[in-house]
Image 1 (cartoon, rainbow over the protein chains, first blue to last red):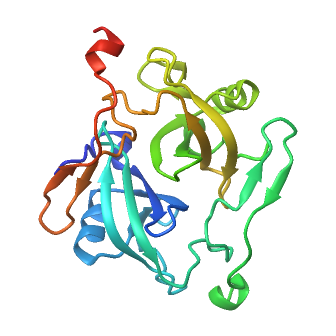
Image 2: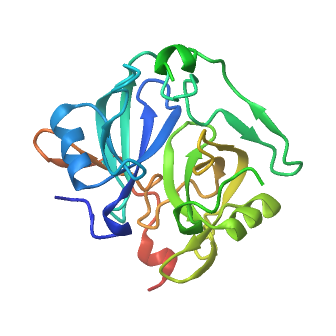
Length: 126
Length: 126
């Protein structure tokens, strides 16, 4: 075990990046079990704090994230995973990246960047 | 204020990415004050949990991070900042990115990726 799961109450931030384009897709948290499952299965798996259990990213939408490579940082408390994003969109709102809101630091103006690749209502059927 | 600082005990993860190459350089945490300072100054500023105060990235090494653009995610609890990395290296160990360790998910083998751009001993004089 290279990572220090004793830090941050056992939940380390995991950045997910598109392996091909370098775009940052999302960030989730992993406990030791989620990290082990990600390594063993080859599909990014987080720990959901709100639901109190593991969740394989895309388990509902089908937009799973295939692990291409895993990095960790100098302090051994942050994970970076480069993936192949199945379905093209990581965000549950239908955008490629969860970071689709761009803020102007001076004015505070927010612009939406990128196009919706799917309709959340159709995918999640809520 | 667009971000939800009530979450995560008031400390939101902030991913720093090289605006030119897309390389993920590091991750730090920002409280509301650090975020305001980052916006106002144009230099990435975190909240240090270990030191209990704000720290401007590069304040000691000179390797400050000039803010190029700011994004936030669908849940309004993670920040992505694209920067111009002064000095070329973000990591206090002298590497361009803090994520210089690559893990083989199957074997657990770790390889160091990238070259040291500076000697930490010379820069930090510890």
